[in-house]
Image (cartoon, rainbow, N blue to C red; front, side):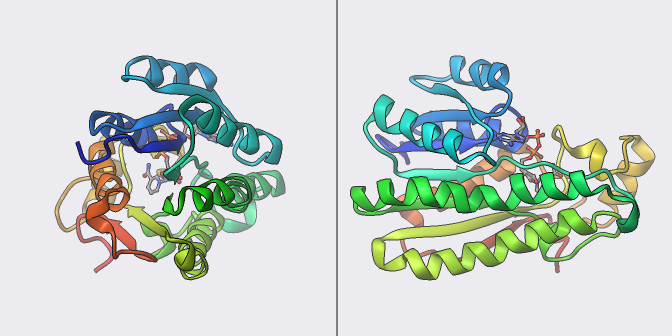
Amino acid sequence: MRLKDKIAIVTGGGSGFGEGIARRFAGEGARVVVADIDGEQARRVADALDGAIPCSVDVSKSDQVAAMVGVAVDGFGGLDILVNNAGVAQRNMPMLEVPEDVFDRLYAVNVKSLYLSALHAVPVLKARGGGVIINTASTAGVSPRPGLTWYNGTKGAVITLTRSMALELAPEGIRVCAINPVIGETGLTAEFMGGEDTPEIREKFVSTIPLGRMSRPLDIANAALFLASDEADLITGVCLEVDGGRCI
Ligand SMILES: NC(=O)c1ccc[n+]([C@@H]2O[C@H](COP(=O)([O-])OP(=O)(O)OC[C@H]3O[C@@H](n4cnc5c(N)ncnc54)[C@H](O)[C@@H]3O)[C@@H](O)[C@H]2O)c1
């Protein structure tokens, strides 16, 4: 049990990578708040886990993020691990065609959420004497693909914020790391492919991944488990590619 008695929040826990992380954490003994804007999916995942609590939240809204942290504190007695995983994509398209409201939503959900969760969660982590924050960034922030420019920018920001937060929070015993998944099989796959997920388009993406396959929720969950566990006690500011060699 690598996370025995740890208390975790996983945002975007209702599907894809977040669901995989929530399941893996719970399997290793963590008590998990499964937080998602889709409350039904959060409940579906939480109901399948031992002692998990579902939470309906829009991570771009300060009052809702405060309430989410409150669910962990009131329901489990504190917080040790925060996984900022919720994210939205843009349709793969030329950068000048992306509407302003899509741009605003991308930065609110993928970037502002880190600021809001820090505001509300860091004091709780400090009170526990330390903890871990894991952000889901992307290979998009390291080796951007065309057609995803504004999305790529959000993930570049997550990577820089991860490193900067790691420096600033180290004296508090709070480690901050990120995971950079390569394109994966989740709810966002079709968006990254331009709206259509066909075998031909998949092949185009897979041909850029040396190990020859897309990522799966369990790949990302295994990396998150390691980074969240005490085995990673001296690791902070690391943005770990889980990408089959795509960024080499
Ligand atoms: N799938 C990929 O190819 C890929 C690659 C690299 C990084 N990522 C990142 O992985 C993370 C998880 O995405 P996924 O691929 O599992 O997709 P997904 O769509 O399966 O999961 C994202 C989850 O986030 C939730 N969500 C969206 N907006 C939210 C909000 N405002 N507040 C709370 N929850 C919200 C959704 O309801 C969904 O359950 C995202 O940050 C994404 O950018 C995905």
